[in-house]
Image 1 (cartoon, rainbow, N blue to C red):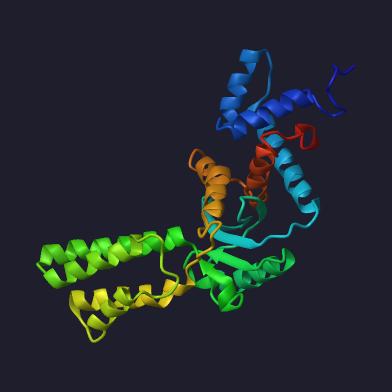
Image 2 (tube, helix red, strand yellow; image 1 turned 180 degrees about the vertical axis):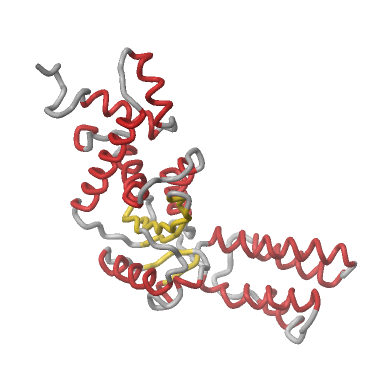
Length: 293
């Protein structure tokens, strides 16, 4: 006879299986969960916990795929790496501006044609009006130029870091004019509210170095021209001009956990993990474990 709550073919109750899944997703390792459970007078081996997590992740991913199609105004896309049995694999995340997971695909940003085709398909399926990404060239030309906007946070950070590094070099070299130019550029990058069109101050700096062809002035010229070229491509969305929702979801559901383990054993576990993490976050902080355990 089976104990109450233990399904046919199972040796443990669904509550115990669910507890193991939640403990793992909260940060314990499979071995850590198996070590902790006896403290509650429960048992579960490392391998059984791993099977439970994989099964729950698969069900969460299936539920996500079966849910009614969502309509998304701004589709955020970003890629990250995943250690897969000792090999670095690529994973592409699709997220709605408000932080809802749209999908996860086993694609590396270097797979240009496949990435572009898939992004275009998802963009059309969710009826998005805008594609929000970082400056990776793979995302260029997928949608009409006016519908592709760059993440303000990423743009400011990358341009600011380059300007700061060149400023430090200018100070070390005693290049007073270049140092002052880069200080002006940094002030423009930080200025709030940000001008929607290229400001006159930036145009003046660009013209100052337009003929520079070598050394530090050439590097300053390249940076200024790139800032000018991308200025009007940066999002000025009054609701949220960043792609932070995508990066936060990647961090919360994937990167943090990946750093505490040696890697996933199979690609289906890579894809299931973020779906399981997103499902456990639930609506208003609650979810129904019975649907996945």
